[in-house]
Amino acid sequence: MHFHQFYLSCLAHASYLIGDGDECAIVDPQRDVGQYLDAARDHGLTIKYVVETHLHADFVSGHRELAARSGAEIVFGAAARAEFPHRAVRDGETLRVGGVELQAIETPGHTPESVCWLVIENGRATKVLTGDTLFIGDVGRPDLAGSRGYTPEMMASMMYDSLHDKLLALDDDVEVWPAHGAGSACGRNISSETRSTIGIQRRTNYALRPMPREDFVRLMTTDLSDAPSYFSRAAEINRIGARSLDDVAAPPLSPGAVRDLLEEGAVVLDVRDSDAFAAGHVPGAVNIGLDGSYASWCGTLLSPKDRIVIVAGSVEHSREAVVRLARVGMENVAGYLDGGLLAWVEAGYESASLSQITTDELSEMAVDVLDVRRPMEFAAGHVPGARNVPLGELPRRIEEIENRPLAVICAGGYRSSAAASLLARHGLTDLRNVAGGTEAWIRDGLAVER
Image (tube, rainbow, N blue to C red; front, side, top):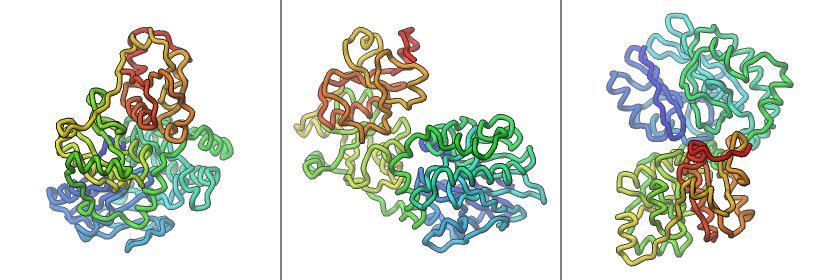
């Protein structure tokens, strides 16, 4: 049997190829599907099925494009009610790929239509692809189906049954292969490991320890962070099917064309690292670097209604930025600044900068400190006197921030640069980004408040 995990770090997303004989299935594909076609061709396999564990909310899937380019059949759980030709499966139904069987296990809880797929070789279950139902160290959050009439408590109760009656009924040596790893917003405590076994999870996963249903529901629905704003939009795109990436184009734009777009209300998205952005950028630009969780932060911080102009350090990075936006359903890119910031400056247009300070400098300054990390990170230790507004909440809470001397900090400088750029775009003028963030603050032996 051919079995391969594809892992997309920026979205902490895992997808899979399962093949036997001259056939294979692709499970939970990302939007840009070339790697699956290449892998199938390299192994002499025909893609027979494109299988989804559920309607993903954190990324846009390439199921329709992959099916169109390979001739494969798309497979969803019946409760998904997808609006394109597909096979709708119920509990216990099987797909055959060569001599391997894929058996559907309906596991509602993260979403109503969630399906895990049991891989059966020679009559024996060896692996289970758990989608967003069971992660390594965690389980899927239950609060993403509100628009379909389900409360988090209802979904958590379903999750309890799915875990205890179905997944934990599997043998301990069955391998667990989830759809996400650490950093995904689909769970709260996901491990950096990308595979495990039922037995290991039974012993170590906090959500699987023995407890009454009522305690499980309370645990799953307490202290949930806000879901990123693009989640509901991405799930709906997946239900109707995304268009081909070939149709998502972003042309090069002259500095004059960019200026015209800005006057019409477009947003400049600067995807360079925080140091480059601080040194100089188009005034009003939002900095979300390609070197971090770029796509998910773009989906969280930017509006799908805004036209976006990309500023990058190269043409290759500009194109990468466009593809990664499309992975979260953002196709509103007007183009990219041809020649980057240098072209902008050489055309005679004004640039802006952002002050970068060290933690030693911060310790000697009389400024307010805004910490944009998650509440759990903040509670574990922060700069004394700092105020916590998580980056994901900043767009709707930005009016709370006064225009006075302010240092913005996160763990290492990535999120704080994004936050500072949003604040500057909103009109705040006396801003500093703390290079190295709280990691540097602690490493330098400076006092921490908890």
